[in-house]
Length: 331
Image 1 (cartoon, rainbow, N blue to C red):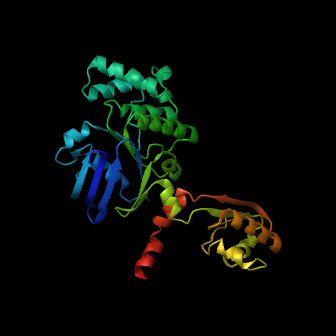
Image 2: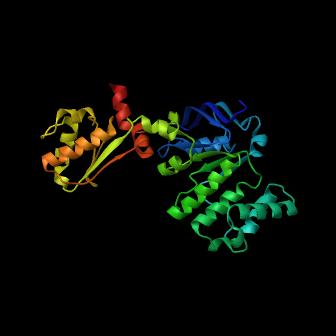
Image 3: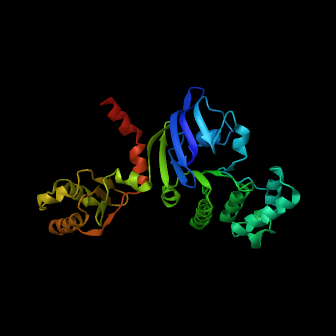
């Protein structure tokens, strides 16, 4: 399809007895960021290796930028860029020399490689540091230079495999800004990450992968809505009152009118370490008012009561909770 940059249908890959991919399907639209989330061993890196022609699939129809990754691997390689989990830079060379080296490896002429290096240094805010050895760069600067190197050939599709692992918040923000700029210029980005906030910030759509299959797909907001819309959080001052507040929220007991339970559902989660209780709500403002009143009537002191949207972290844990899914399948 003309508007699809990546097509994966029924991808399978086995390493010995382990199924890395087990009939995985994925479609990524052009000019978007598509996030791929999943626990360790879910198949994310195997997927990227297959899409970038580094590994052959055992089965399936897989295309990138209009070309088959098996029968047209050479054409695919000319149209993609890859940023792996670890920087592929020469620490002794400066930034410009690194980019020129990558340009020559991609068979650019010497002059073209120099021009392209200067363009990318400027684009990623590294022009002032281009003559400094890479060993003197901060983590965020190194990652931006690594990202620039993956763009030497101006690829149609860019694979980012956990691009901000190990970076501090400032470094992550720098990489995020660079990715947004790329997509604004028309590049398609497939992003695998373990940072749920990263997918929430960058991705137009998200696919959750577990056991080699896509178990959910949609926009971040669509995935969050699966957990029931808004949630109410209560942080109690006394950890010994957690059970009492949980019971209050579940059943509207302990002096609370029964209509509380109509707005605070029975699915109350408890985080004892943070003294936090959380539950989905339907009528957000009515639920907030009633929970606050219920706590006052019960004489329970709360440090904080707040409404919020579900996070991708909660969606991720819900969708990849293997113990719960095993129980459901058995039932």
